Every structure is written in C-alpha cells, then in structure tokens.
Length: 382
Image 1 (spheres, rainbow, N blue to C red):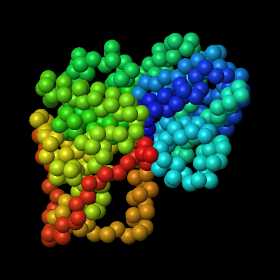
Image 2: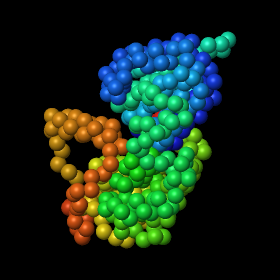
Image 3: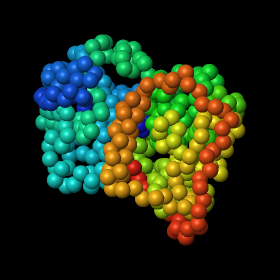
C-alpha cells in the first residue's frame, strides 16, 4: 500500500506536469467501489475535470488532491494498488513497469484505469488514475480550495509529520502517546493520530528508535517517546526527500533487509542481527529482537512468524486446506489495509504480564545459508 513517501512522489509529478494547465477532455468509468463508496460517480468526476484548470496539488499522509479553478475538487487515496500514470513518463520505478510488461506499459489509457484526462496546448499532458484491486478512492469535495483540509476526509485525519510540523510537535506526540494504552505499532498506524504512516514506515521508525512494536505506548518514558518522535521525523522526512526511491534509502535501514520472510530461515541485518516477524494490531511487523527490547508491558502473547534454524518442520497441509486458508487470509488482509484510518478501540486491553509463547523445538535442522534479505519495493525501485 502506498504510504506517505509514495504519495508525496505522485504530488511531485502532478505539480510538474499538471498544475497550471487546463483540461481539454476527461474520461471516467462508473466504478461502484472507487467512486461509489465515497458518494460520487465516474460521470460526476469526468464533468468536474473537463474544461477546468488545475490550480494546485497537495497531500496529507496517504491522501492527495488537486484543486480546480471551479469547485468541486478531487481528493484521492490509492488504497492497496492505486497509482497515477503520466503518458511518456515513469511516475513509478522500472521494476513496476517490468511487471506490467512492455505491451501493458505502451497501452493508453493503462490497464485498470478509472479516470484519465488530457490537457490543452501544443504539448498536451495525459494522466490516468489506475487501480487493479479497486480499494482506491476518488471523491469530489465541494468547498473553496483553501478550505479543502477542513472537510472530510482530511479533517478527520491527524497531522502529516512533514507537512504539518507546526501541529506535529513533541508535545502533541507525547501527550497523545501517554493518553493511550495500545501497542506502539498500532498507535502509529492510526491515521486519526498521525497521517501517512503505514506498515513499513512504522517498522522502520520503531527500529530506528530501538522500540519494541508490542510495548504499550503509555509505558515508554520521556526519553523513549522523544526517540520515537525523532525517528518518525527522520524516516518520513528522508523518504520524502528521496521521493520514495528505495534505491536511495540508507543501507542501515531495516527496509533494505526486511523482505526475507519465509521458510529459508530468518532474515538478518548485515551485522548478523536476526530479524523476526510478529503480528501487532492485526498487521505483520518486522523487528530486530536483539535491538528492540521491551522496557515496559507488552500486548498479549507474541508468536514468531519466522522459523528459526532449530525449529521442527510443521506438518504439511493438504492442497485443499492451503487454498482455503490463503483465500481467507487474502480477504482479511484486504479488509485491514482498506481501513487503516479507523481509530484504535480503547475498550479491550490485553494483559500486561504475559510472556511470549515459546516455539516447540524438535530435531536440529541444517542451518540454511544466510541471506541479506535485501529486496526493493516493487512499486519503488528502479
């Protein structure tokens, strides 16, 4: 799912290619998910764009928008697989297009398009919004352009740590963190608290701050809270400065080594530190157990999702069972990712003194070859 840096990348391209231009023509299909679930239609979006002039483009976390000379304006969210393409330019990275295939890239409008437009002038620009899995959202907001962030859905979301430095202060972060009793990873994913932090940004932040993702947020001391706050600013700021280009992320970032989860044994950092995967707040979390130590209570029981070298092999499931479980997992994952912005429930609290569940050990297996686990985001590498 595109997060704060990927969205900032698209806004960068929109400001270069679209802002200040008049839209000669626009086309939109009638998609009941992308448009319908936020109260509009493809026809309404098409009418709002055609003949209008684009005045500005901006973002708040995972949301981005274009304001038009005549309201209403477009506010968009990529969901899981949404993206904006510009004809004869690569807004994403090389490997993204390699997966699409040459013929798909040459096709215009691109496959899975929801709306596309063409500007006036001797060198017209053509832009398309695509979404294969249809969890993205495109809505019309009828208000003065200057007030767009005072209206739904932006007004319900928390401050953007890069755009809203005047609001996202240490006092704000500390006060909210101390007032809640949820795992810190789950709190960072709450879009009503901070806009734009998704799974990999949250994991990177906690790794840089040496904070355990399951520790309750109100059990960090002032110095630890300050470290997490500074890590948020560092990770979000640098990733946006690099326009989400993962090839330019620092080598010491967790991002570069977190992609080795599987049956070949645990991923490791270049210094040999083992990486592990646990589920926190319904989301898979990557962390370094040797670095990210608990200093307070943690939520519930933790079960590692990665086999260590000496774990006994699990019994194999039948093909029918595997297929059924995979289908359930995919549906659950889609539901979780689509609703990242929902605030965390305060009602149910897990016990604070439970210990991790130890894995059953059997015969020692041969130690697999170590891997750096380095892999680039499919959307972000070039």
